[in-house]
Image (cartoon, rainbow, N blue to C red; front, side, top):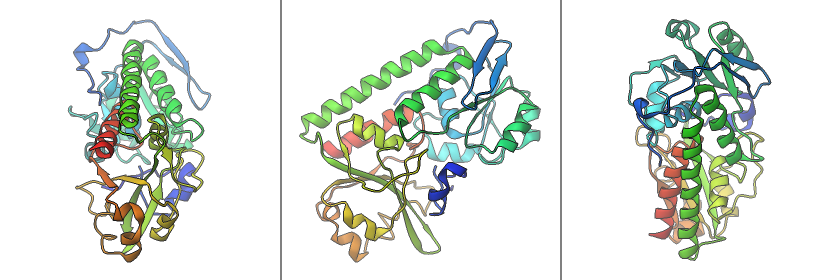
Amino acid sequence: MRRLLCTAPLAAAAALLLAACGTTEPAADDAPKASSQPVTLTDASGAKVELDGPATKVVGTEWNVVEHLLSLGVEPVGVADVKGYKTWDSAVPLTHDAKDIGTRGEPSMDTVAALDPDLIVATTDLQAGAVKQLRKIAPVLEVKSADASDPVGQMLENLDLIAKATGTTERAATLKKDFDAKLAEGAEAIEDAGLKGAGIAFADGYVVSNQVSLRPYTSGSLVGGINERLGLKNAWKLKGDEAYGLAATDVEGLTALGDVQFAYIGNEQDTASDPFGKELRNNSVWKSLPFVKSGDVHRLDDGIWMFGGTGSMERYVDALVAALTK
């Protein structure tokens, strides 16, 4: 299943032909009871969103907002690319029978309309024309897709906005508290292992037409932001895009990293997603890299969505700390 971030802010990354794109969510019955008072919000696009009350029948057009909803105890009635979500985001699993509304870039308007949602949650990556059509069906809450100037802060801001729309602000506060605790726990483990300040390079890659394309996650990426909060130093010198903090390189570009810890995430259900463990395994440049020679290449667990929410990032912290301190 291709990881898709088919949006304007990722034009540079799209040139790679790479698709982009814990805490266990409570059962819906355990979620805090929402007030029936009207809700008025201003979303990331500047639009005013008015709801008769906290939304309960919600559609999510992007995986990160679906993860936020599930973590908040709100089971979305419609999800873009259900199979893809289940493949790439098992940290906060989608276990109920949500209706597949189409791709993340092109949701089916007829399918969404048939669900009669209270609210549609989208990101600013979704094309304006699609958002305009969705607004004819139900109120649309747009959250900012990503912000390389403060990737972790933007993720938490999106969580808060969705929580306000769904009447789950108490749950959001708990999620953020648990998230902070996980970061502190991970940072302590990194320091105890003598790795504070160590260089780390996270990347993903794809093979298209027998060509390996690699994508570095700079300090402006969500994963990069998490690494720095753990006390690690991002080793990439490349400049990432302004939204996701992603750059582009090839195997020769890895020679600039030096002696670092190298981490990546692939997926067993996507045969093209692990060039580091497959296509590059016998590559002379790859084999000459210091971190390859020293055995400091770490494939982290499948199912951690690198652009997700607190659940995915907590799972990422656990996986990375375990790999670096074993």
